Amino acid sequence: MKGIEIDKHGFEDLIGILSMQVAKLGLGKISLSNIGNDNYLFRLDECVWAEISHKRKKQKDVTCPWALIAMALYQASTGNKVFVADSEYLPNGTITKIRPVSDIYNVLK
Image (cartoon, rainbow, N blue to C red; front, side, top):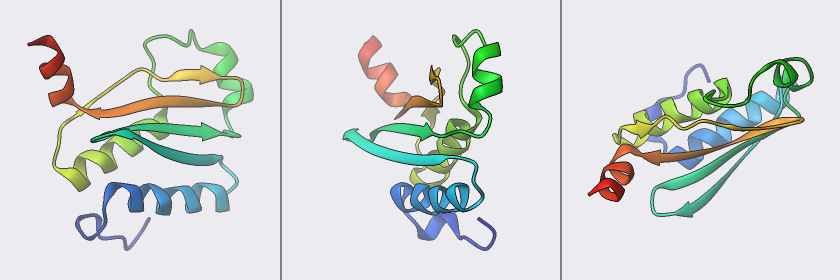
């Protein structure tokens, strides 16, 4: 993503750029779904590391590294602090919910 000015793109556009680069390099296939307001489901399929690393992980309390990058892009592009959620590990990828910390605080009130 060299040369990309994060502040000139929205979060969904940035994920689109990341998705193209990851696919082009043969590292996986990224998709993003808006599930309401500022909440998203980030999905990675055909992950290059899934066959080896997903079987070794205890698939609990671990966030996918690609999802962490997506969360960083979310935070940088929206200005909202992001809640670092655990990923659901699948045989060939992951699913991770991306949402602002403010959602968590609003639920706890």
